[in-house]
Image (cartoon, rainbow, N blue to C red; front, side, top):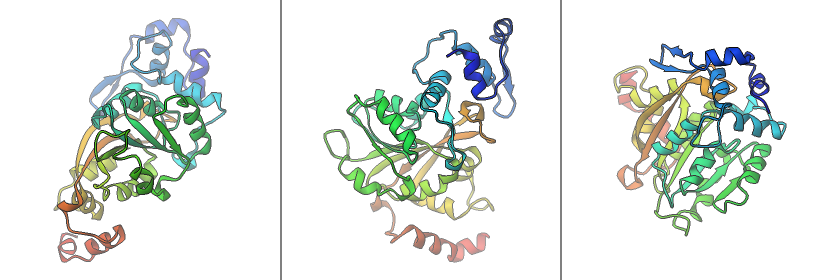
Length: 295
């Protein structure tokens, strides 16, 4: 598959050979991020020349994997696939993934992040709602022996029952597992509500979120209107930390917003008062005199 055909999949302008030599050196400036980066179609052109990569999951590999199965991102599922292998490396690095870890990944897609997690020595439980993508990632790593794929909706998945057999098993070096995922932006709140109270199972949750959401969850001050019940929830169950920004040009298809990686270090249940359910927690917050005074 040649570079121009790959670029056309994402409706990028075709690049002639003469223009390629010139544009190979030309940088685009992202004023909002304050960093210099190559335009997305230039990355496609540059990598086609065989530049060394730490992972095979670059622009070409991701689009090739999708095309090989006749798959296209489904808007209804909020699918945006990562095109930059270095981001996957940084995402795994933010969680400190190492040999013997058990990791739950949400929405593995073509398996680009899965590949990094497995190469780091982790056992991966991947939960994928799209049955076609679940089949793709299962087939890709069929010989690994350290991957289990569940074709389920993560929001409805019985995470505890699936994880209980893995944490403390021969796969795991510790009592706690980790969550590392590039999730659809439209399920961010649901995922946070689901996993943050699970400090007895997971030690850390590292998510790639919409940047605005990431900043609001981590930076919002107690005495500002941006401090909402979800902020109370996040700080009650975890210690959140903003890790790094991910420009929108790193995804296919390109979303309308930038993303960012946030790490939530989960607190042990012994560190906070018992709460019967997430629903009761938010009810308690909304009806508390302190929250009413702030708003």
